[in-house]
Image (cartoon, rainbow over all chains, first blue to last red; front, side):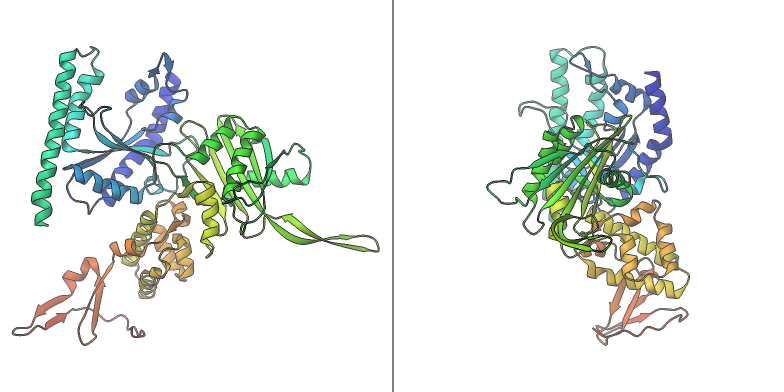
Length: 205
Length: 336
């Protein structure tokens, strides 16, 4: 594990931090004419988060045999939009510019549940964001994860993350219900703002 | 890198056929003959020959060709190679004809590498010279690497779980008008497309040209580059690269240097993409105003509003247009 951490630290400082910064700038450039974007961020996965993910178990077996080569979000980017339809606008523009291998609209697995929602992509790192005259080799990641979410989806996701996923205590039924209730409120707020934006903003433009 | 396995298959045209020709596969085991040396050269030089970047089509991390490729990498038996050959056969039209396919697989530590090459069938004449005689023979099944129709693909990576989503191909037909033939290898057989999207490639070209024009000090260079921004629209829908555009429109060396200086990664200069006129227009660099008398005033978009003054004339629909500066060049162009 010490060797893995050292290997990841080296990769992160040698390449990932710069690529993440350049990627953020690149995405901002692609989306410069797309309205109602709250923020665009990109980051290289922190060392402690990488180690935690590398140690993840799946049915009593390690999920990753080769974490550095198998974990797909060593670089992650996130775009927060105002309204639901803006997610589609942003997605369409980015799909036009960057090739991807996965496009997944994450929603709860049942229509009666409320929880995490967001548009997720696994995309190729564009050559434009690599350091000067750098050619990716087989030891370097070629993909990054992109999340596109509304303000409300993001707010719920951030607020509930530590509570629901990082807390050492398992949530009881009431606590789970309250977390789901908060997700339902975020879902509802998105719907209302989407309706209002269609009635007021699109009509006036 | 050590070659671990070579399989060869004779692949017939089978697209749209109800019954497929039975596939004949062969492992190339002999390692000390000209065939092996030729294939070893293909394997070792694949990175130099295969210059077009492709990415597999996928929306849910699944791609049928990639599945077959991974299957072969994990277990490089002839039956797994046959799946790839069968796929090629199902996409090969009569026009593409008979072909000889090689799958060459190698490993070095964690790294795995696969080169798939297709030699098209040609006809030729075999000549053998004796001491006092000459034998001439017609051969109707020769498979050659030097023709336009030769195709190859290279895939390499460390992980069969997360890797092998992209590759490199050589396809001499991507530049020709035979895009249908090229689509057969990249789009249909490999179920992939250029890694650089049309919008991304076109935007790069537009930005590089715009910045190069801005930084050009010499009028001739500036003028040549501005000319390219207009001529390039004739390439709408065609596969090209920044390098090819500059070569095609004879950009002078000084202009090339300026364009290169805008691109951090010089490999981007050769990346293939489909040029889009509509996308290029979004990065419009020049604004022009034309009067009813045929006078045209044109300037870089970023300075137009500051340097071109348009004042309405009172009690008239006409406009007075003024600008100031030194005259550096006159141009004579054919009217529209």
